[in-house]
Amino acid sequence: MGDNQKRLSVSSSSSHLSCSPSLTTAQAEGGSPMIAEESWMIAEERAHEILSIIQPFYVSDRNRNEIIDYVRALIKSHDGIEVFSFGSVPLKTYLPDGDIDMTVITKQDMEDKFFEKMYNTLKSEEGKPEFDVTDVKFIPAQVKVIKCNIRNIAVDISFNQMAGLCALCFLEQVDQLFGRDHLFKRSIILIKAWCYYESRILGANMGLFSTYALSILVLYIINLFHSSLSGPLSVLYKFLDYYGSFDWSNYCISLSGPVPISRLPELMAASPENRQELLLDQKFVRDCVKLYPAPTKSVETNGLEFPIKQLNIVDPLKYSNNLGKSVTIGNVKRVKHAFTLGARKLRDVLSLPCETIGWRLEKYFGNALERNGKGQRQDVKDPVTAFGTGRSELSDLSGDFEGYYGRLVSYQNNEFYRRAMNASTSMQPNGFQNMGKRRGTGTYIPDMSQQLYHARFRGSGAGNSAAHHIGASSSCNLSGEVSTSSASIKGEECVNSEPCQSSPPENIGDSISSRTLEMENGKEEESKTSQKLKSS
Image (cartoon, rainbow, N blue to C red; front, side, top):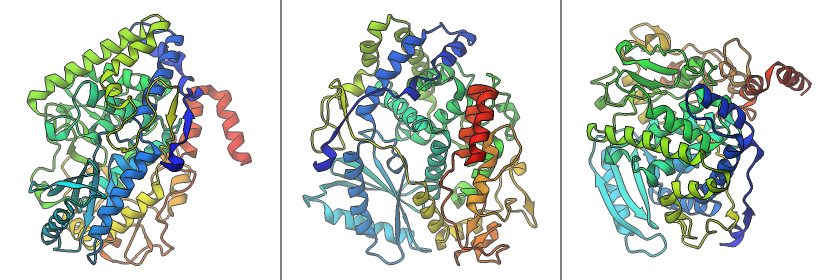
């Protein structure tokens, strides 16, 4: 294993525990039993140790990246083909049993023809020892997918899937904005582990939640309760408690708050019940929709309004997409029961004497530790550190947002993407017209300024949240220039000709970090933060 065999001691970061009093107060106000601050400190520290076993390692990152490079090398032998990974692997929120998602960008009218070539290429690799390709299958669904196993890891290869790249950029950006030692990503990993190993409610192909839907549910909890969350375990507790008692029959979840189903298709969210300011407000979401526009395929244009299901979750990047649609009617009761039961059991654990909280929390995550805590991982061939040794593998959850966004720009310059965007620009669902400006015959053209990315992300403005300052809206055209209109995708004239800035600013989280300090530390800290920023 080389340098990846180094070990680091497991220690609970002070940032994990800094907000425990706030969480206790919030729970008391919400009617839940008061949980002692010391209990939260012990529980968060043990949750940190559990996370150190199931989170991505350097060695697991390396193994998965080798598989991605291997598939990319097989595919890119064909001219005009680009291959991108998306989902939990580049986001670094995958579980040891998680799959690898890749999408192939083809030239116009090449998709169907290339499917067969790709399938045959992978079939020819079966039996070769280095990467051990097995079980190659072609799934002729609405979104065609080639599935296979490589080194005992499931790999899904789709074609021209813009939405996955957009979601990756969006979630990586949000994690950088939230900060706090990747609280967002660590919370996703812990909650995914509970949903997958303990309650078995994760898996869109099984009529349950997709990983993206789960990520948005986690994002909403942090967005709403940010000032009262001490670490990933407190996010899990609030996640289970909130969604276990949520009125799914009358409301849907949106990033800005619960939306009455009776008001749809208007996305008019109710006021946050905890009376706190959202970290990511509606303006931030609108900016992200402009920055990460996904084309609508012809198979999706039959129903552009938000489809009502048993569980309704609005995709923040595409308002007509219900992320709860994968949960079947037969599984709805199971999901609700899992949330309610999970919240009750975790509350019982946290209410125990301090000396018993640790091992009872281990029991709460018993299946995850049984699967991954004995020195072996599904996605790593060599032995890894076992749970309970006080040590862990090297890990880094930092993502490459600039690289992800560069791939997205490359995709937007692709002929397939431009053709799809041309076909879908006039297809905005009813009720969402206020999310951007319409001109001419109905083509959706976002209201964009002429600022470059770094100016857009770091500019000042008024609003309820520092997130108002964030969200570049420019895009790059074929000649590598910044355009202030989606017309540049068609190769039309740019309003401003500057060298293309295909990456966001280095200090993308400055404004929201400052605002978080204001919220949590009061006016005194607000003044200190302002002085510090001015002096820098």
